[in-house]
Image: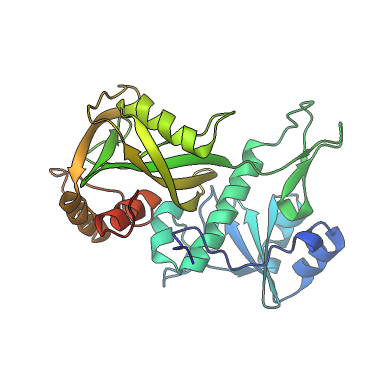
Length: 302
């Protein structure tokens, strides 16, 4: 089985066949065992024990009845779980940033939270029909929006991103993004474009950003990334050239690192150590960290 990274491994049964039934959704909301997670400005309430503060539906019934965006997240056992866009309301407990909170949560709760954030954010960004411009309304338990004016259905957007570690022998290529302060390096990454395969996107992005030619490409793993709603698709890529020519638009710097350097950077990132003087990696929450970790230990080769 594949490794499961942060925001993956959602344990809920999404009940596709039943979430389209509005009467069934209403019955789940009326069940006293059902729990709801309100998000205020995309931030969830937090218990003192760094666990999500799942709440009774009755606490939020007036906001639900007023038409706030409500998402049926799924079923676990006999209990249903929902998320609610409670922006503008005062949460009954402290709020937490999802990116900072996720590493502290049990993996399955982080996955549920990631799905809730991505869906609520999508609803906030897509209130009007892309076909006719009329307002749309949530349907199917929040898993689509429907336009009553032209009949179009709109489904949650997911943007695939290729993220790759280009390697050549005992060295790998990392880049530092222009938009990020400090000395943090990461795998190169970029959005897929229409009309290309995943492998073609890997080769194009590495060449565009760093001027390196890529030969063989090997898929490793993927990760949902709810900021706002990406699917990170991870690869190892065989570099067939060495001379770096950064684009100057995406990257401020790019360089080759020895495998031993990556092992040391992985250890510091996992421990939360970042002094700014030495090149660093993203933390374990990011698939970039995991790709570098696996390669540095010799677990994956092109």
